Length: 195
Image (cartoon, rainbow, N blue to C red; front, side, top):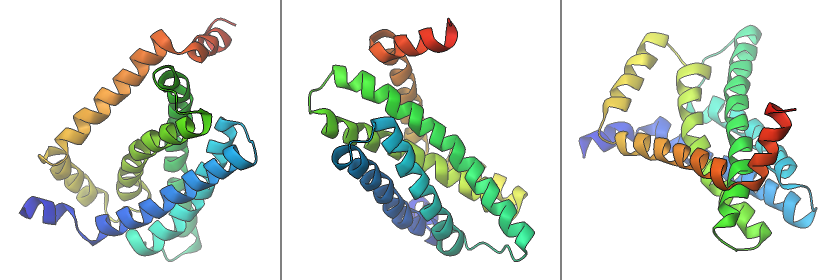
């Protein structure tokens, strides 16, 4: 119980709260664009991600990680590091939605809009976890050494291990299934690798 209390400090709780709000901004924006404005799924997802990144920066900077950047240079550096981290997870999300949109639709038939929403939610959970670590240990870090020590303690905890193995399993499963069953993946391979 003490390990859970240690992990669920103010920073983590606020990150969860603002992470849920950021996720809602992402999913609602994407869904409205796709379902009501008939924007293509990947473009709708990309626009949703951009809106959520801007929302996340301002909330994480002020209320989650309590940034101490005082100078303009420090604030811009922090902003660019945050954007760089989010650009990485944006690519993860775009590729993930692309893969899941093709792969999972072969296994269920919820309709195009509901299927897209399910895909978006699955990838969003993975992205939230990645974004926390990138924000804490890269964008808003206070001291590099203490950040590494905290990361090492957290990753060695029994609380983290199931999430680590689940992430690896889901990632390998998505790659495996998409390579063998995803019809658009075959077109993607032909376009980019054999053109």
